[in-house]
Image 1 (cartoon, rainbow, N blue to C red):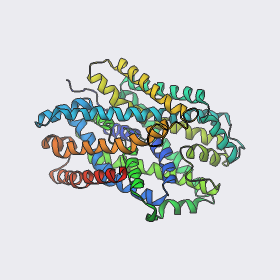
Image 2 (image 1 turned 120 degrees about the horizontal axis):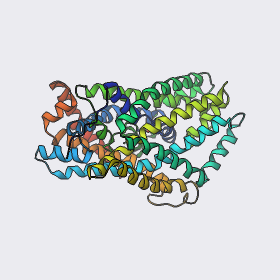
Image 3 (image 1 turned 180 degrees about the vertical axis):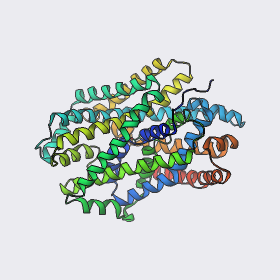
Image 4 (image 1 turned 135 degrees about the vertical axis):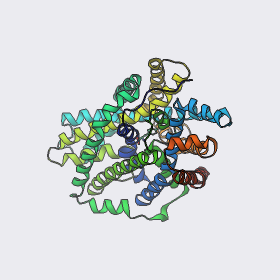
Length: 446
Ligand code: PFF
């Protein structure tokens, strides 16, 4: 069991890597559609509250464990548990995280593949002059074609694993440096365009004027799950990145920056998408197709629309790429911890994720009506239960480990905060984050 020697080269590189993991489909694709399905502003308020109260402190806990352990998640947990005389069974939490990202990456790769298809279509100018109805019908026809979905899913997964096999710190840094600033620029432009559409005012009201009367325990659980998902917290994926974090960098500050960047992307995407929805009389509760249908409509109306749309899908693809690299990392790190070479570990992960992903591919055609569990088809199941139940459960256990089990001096050193800051963090984790997660999970599931 050796400490990893790989490190992000600078503090900025670490923040960018974590932002790269956080910003992805969760912000641009999932946030708008589940906000649409769950009624708008009240859901948004809850989601932001969960980011602040749970996401941030637990994210610190997760990265801190990786930084203190400097090994794969399983080994870091086992090592730190042994140091404080606790049970070494804590290491199974690392395996639970790997199982969670396994499920998530399987559908994530399929949906990211959709952006490849849309990127190519946008470059071809396929959406030029198309009506909203044409675009919607084109999307439905695409989903019903398993061969095209399989091709894009395979391509995207191969892209991801190529970087993972090379070792994340090196491969990812260069990509992140360029990508994030460009993504913001484009989203700001898009939101600026949205401000000129007639649906803008309605969209703002719908997003920011909450009506709490429609909230149910299930909606609250959706919001909590989404907070974990969007921040990439709860699956030990950031723990794996924490192992590469340089010394002498304040963790709370880094994590705060990431959360602000992450929520900003979701809000910009939400404003742009819902302005189009309300301008065009579309249904906000349209589901997973929401972004893929609305944005081509919006861009079709803009000067240079095809060009903007191509750039947008390119950036979305890059953003999902950096997230899926993070999703693959805990699985590869776990297998490596068991003695497999990195290349072989990556290949094993690739075959397994690809196979599970095929169930999502067929969920839009032959398996659409196959109810596996809770009345959901395979895609609905893997895109709901792992983000909304497994991530909070993993986050809960990570929080318990960080605030109650691991040696205090190791925690304080790895967080890189003063005594007052440490007590504040631990108080919030112990008395806010842990009970709140537990209550929302139990209420949502019962
Ligand atoms: N945060 C990513 C997104 O919003 O798209 C998804 C994600 C990445 C979830 C890594 C979980 C994870 F461990």
